[in-house]
Image (cartoon, rainbow, N blue to C red; front, side, top):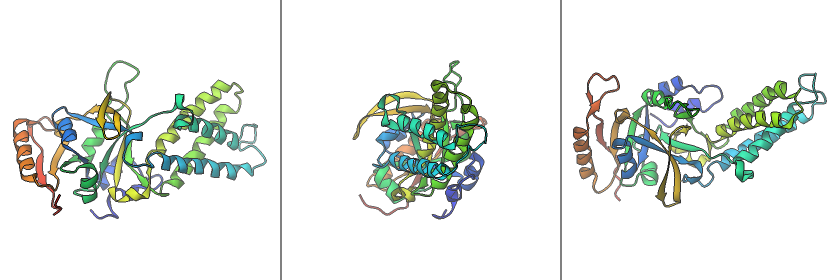
Length: 318
């Protein structure tokens, strides 16, 4: 798969669906260390990390900057209109845009008590990529997942009998890098504001309008987390926004890191690749032994299954 193939075609407005993601990228990869590998294989849990604790210093900020730019550009565009958009109310596009933008700034952290935190888990289209071995999996591993099976699982809704019953992932799709996602974001802002007008134009009650603005602002803010600095373009990330799971804390270089643990059946793992390092032979042997001792049923429940074990082809000496 070349750098210009795969899900690059999906980093444009209107093209993203789960079926097209699976068609253009049959496998997705997750780079991790021995602790992450053990958690997935033995505990059968995949961790999602609070967005603030990822290694990109501009994480979330880049998307927020594009979001503010989209609101400002839309307001400038519609401020030149002298009549209401629908011709029947004083509540216009500019009013809707300002309402949603104000609420958006609150839930993005401008007003700390109402700030929303997001948990994400990251996959990649890139198999056996040196930069990701160095950054995320030094002396580590790269797990391969079948894209269709992974999407089906992340769409699973745990039945707890409570209002928390919703899919494991709210959204999963390729990340936009640099300004490539701006036009799609601006279109979303404009479309959302238009939806806001008929519901709010006859309502003078502030809390009513605020409630609608909150739901719309959260939808737009969630979209912005799929926008990243173009410094990370080569990672070709496919990001999952996790909405259901077990809250945990793990110690790490960034302190006590908030995470969400979600179930991930062992038989979702197609293969485990051992990264380039001095002990790759022992790591490969240990994985084969583990796989032989922990065989499970395949996804169809028709026979035994264990993951493939592979070695990185990169001749990198640590």
